[in-house]
Image 1: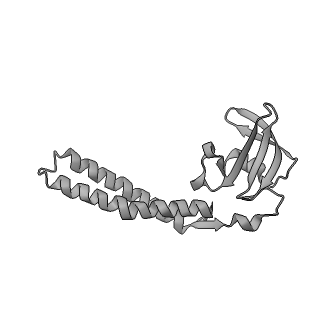
Image 2: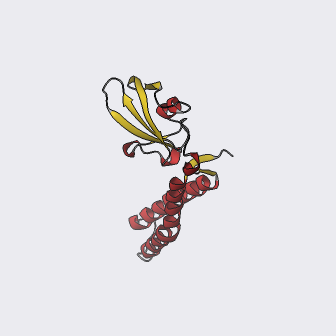
Image 3: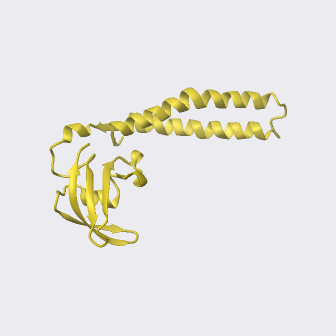
Length: 158
């Protein structure tokens, strides 16, 4: 059973989603199913079939969340403060050497990755290129759109 690395914030978000799905969504869907059953013939009851489909999707997501949370390895980023080497949890500010555009990325677990908000998965090409590097280093990242070159400006553990 492989451990799934994640930040404390990512763990809390998954735990909250699990709580909401179990305690709010599940009873709401059960209520929808019982209301649809009251309408009669189930073979031609679209509301019933939609509610059962919704229940199936919700239960699948609950199982997925329970699995991820059971395998979670929560990494306390606060304990990494003072490190100058990039590792899991680091927020790295880089500058694109072609466009001079600055970007900041936090390296997080796969379950919490969201590129639009600056969180990249530890398995992503940019994170793999950054791991182990320090401020001032230049990294080459192979992307689907071609190679990119970044200079590391700042490393923080926030």
